[in-house]
Picture 1 (tube, rainbow, N blue to C red):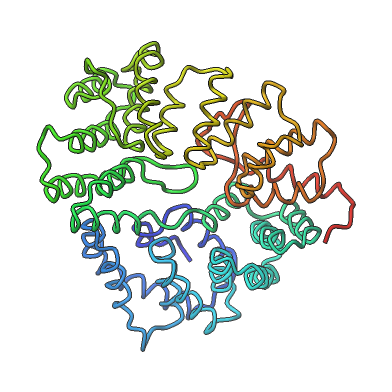
Picture 2: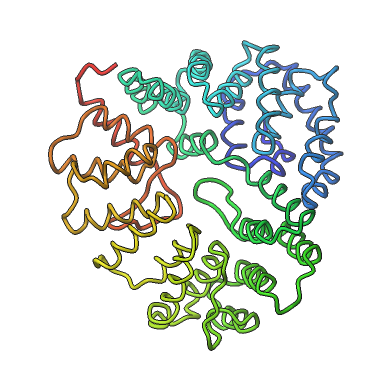
Length: 469
């Protein structure tokens, strides 16, 4: 089947490409393709109304309108399949039910089996998902990605040697790319849809006049996640939510909440290299560069504003470290706002100093956030203080067993000590499947995390002949 224009509205592009690649490489029954295309044409007529409902925050209403296009009593397998694809990121419960219905009706249709496997996998049903992936692979044995996803299921079932073999097949299969595999893993393991979170926050901010919900809503709109590695301002949501929240909360122009959410929205949509423009925004709302160096009290929005100012070089580095950093740290120490602590570490003077180690440790203790645990371990590792028996490393592994970064640090230390085990490699691979890790030397974040470490772990496990089941 060709790529469907309709799906681009509600299904993330990465998942769309991933789910439809199977359809272009296998023989889908003609009647199914015809019914699918007719259903797509029918849905196009309701899309404008759905778009407006989504923008206003009525996500459930938009989804109901889509479902109403094909009443459940007369819904065909192809229609269920299409609706499941459309709702994959918008409504996980309905998407699961729709793909299940299609799979029950069309159990031998590889395209349907493929989508059903992804649903089962995402729901944590690893054995049924494995069986569905294996069924698909029998129909298309030369496709690489399904073997990689089988490996993920197998390693979560602690069938490590079988997982290694499935991964080996994925590396040898002639069709499919590493990028395609990475996008599929992201589609299965990414966080629950931010569109639903946005709709709930909007309702809470407006209906209950909840200021904290307003903060969280604008922070989400300003840096809306598309997948693991792409995020940025969702301009159509911002254009609706910002005035809606201001009106509902009846915020005076000089109110700190008003100034903060307005400043963050303008910084998020400004040219990131326009220092003069960013300074103008900060001056307008009297934040960071005013005489008292006013610090927003919401960590997420402070991080957005501060990052924009630093990226545009609207704030001098000396001013950042000497004047702003102490104020942010003072604010962070008042509570457990992990984003405020993140801003405090961001503003602090760079380097692997003992003071930075203390701040990372304090942030970890205050918030329980993995970023600060990783900061502690990376500083200790870079300074040669970290060993496999380190109490903080053991605590981090226990607290964050599926953090790829924590597992990577543990692996690198064990490798130096020549103490790497196959189980440790399996644990590290399991964490990488949940979210790819990318850091160079000292937690350098790049735009698109890759599966390089995952492939490294499987390569080492393949060379390890120990009989771990």
